[in-house]
Image 1 (cartoon, rainbow, N blue to C red):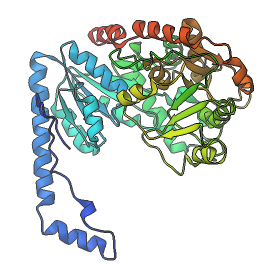
Image 2 (cartoon, rainbow, N blue to C red; image 1 turned 180 degrees about the horizontal axis):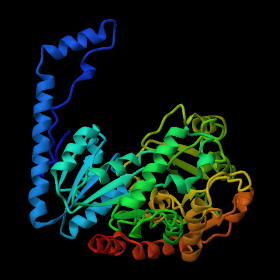
Image 3 (tube, rainbow, N blue to C red; image 1 turned 135 degrees about the vertical axis):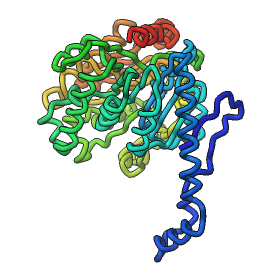
Image 4 (cartoon, rainbow, N blue to C red; image 1 turned 60 degrees about the horizontal axis):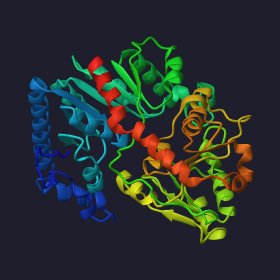
Length: 449
């Protein structure tokens, strides 16, 4: 675990409390060599001592600040941009913000979130230690990331807290994604039951819930649980300081499309089309590229080259010149880079007769990538089947919404679009839906609790 020091302009971190597994090569007798190396050193003692000191300093800082300030301790697996932005906004509004994260943050991660938190405790993946920390601090709020299949974190924090309010921040909601019997097509029953049980506990025991669904759809789903009704829809709203596309597009020139997000193979037994809509990406990629346009694909953070082999094969076998595959970029760098393109795409082939994904998802889910594209100043192309995607596009005239069955006519559908008008509308959308504007609802939400 490492702690960010307050007011440290050099952004230094404790970096000595780790076990250097990589110094000993894996070979016969590896474990004996490792044990011997550890026994003749002070690695374990130094690690325990340094970690104990770091935790005590973190606890002291939270409790001191909580006596005179409003304080929020964010707890996450991975600190995704939406949580970082929420923390940044609250920090600018006189809250003291802290982060406990399960992951080991890279230098780029740290640079990306350094202005969001007063202090950071990272690599805290041992639940007994996390529980000890939670029981030792008394912030005004805990703000917990609730990631599908990891809802146990939310339940754990709620059960550990004493007087602090707990806000749970959902990305996807398991029960809203698909029903129990349909989830069993791929996922094991134990995992489904555990997630649904934790989901119920969170809905019924948290003090407030933040989500990224259409508010009316989320409220309708929440009626199945006994809850206090404190909900807030909060998307990845634009940081208007970042780059937006100013590029004017000349009619009839080759268009540049971009996709960034989860990539699902078209024929993977563990990711069937009826439960994973992105399994239909291959079809939409082909239709775009067959029109002789350029497609830029940015791989996700957890990209696996074997899992994404279908994409590299598509480039190698069919579109070596026009399909361009890029490595993962942090959000601020990604937005800067993709602002050079013409359209962001979030469209795939969906068979509504065969899909087992729930009505709640098709009616109310919102893809974060939509807001990433818009923040870069790009119009978006979405599925009309996803009604909330369709609504923001058509209502604001910021892109194109297409039925899956019409994807075969993709080139014809985009032929007469005035891209420059769409880009101007995107700028207007971002001004109305910036973090600066929408953050006021977040502040009111916290204050209401």
